[in-house]
Length: 229
Image (cartoon, rainbow, N blue to C red; front, side, top):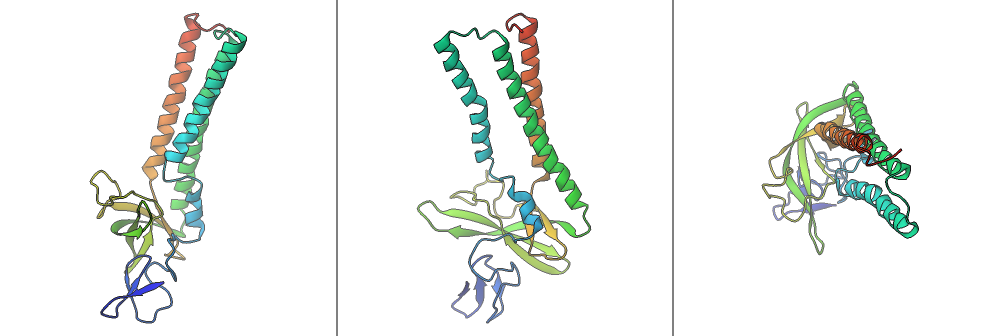
């Protein structure tokens, strides 16, 4: 869907770029309608398995950590089970293993990203947030419009990440004018996505630290005789 401005200039409803009169698709974002899209190729699918919004992942972690502990506490209370024995050690060991698995998961994503960046059919470049696509609802949604260049041609993508009701907040890392890393297919410049290489390393380090910290605490409790094997 394209919008016709008062001076008869065609504007893409997706990326807000100016396009030629009578065009059937936008030659800047590749969109032929008003849907938010980052492309349908391999570049985008690589990142679909990891949500850029960490809230959902955070909820999963909290559930995996605390729900088993709550259930364990209730069972021990009902049946008067001694919580200083092997059962508690098993629960804590499970948490250590869980943290370690998440560290391995994000490290695996980092390795895959490195392999893809070294692929001759992939281009790594830097884009800039030049505008925001507003989806009007009871609570408005804003999606950053990122502009990047491949050779001497300019492209845009609408980053499918809701940044909230105030797109120009200084606390928002995706505010207007911010630079972001772009991973793009050399065969199809429209097939591109924003990526955060540093995020995978940070998450790997965080979960490795948590697994090491809990493991050290477990060893300390056993050494002090507070947990009995």
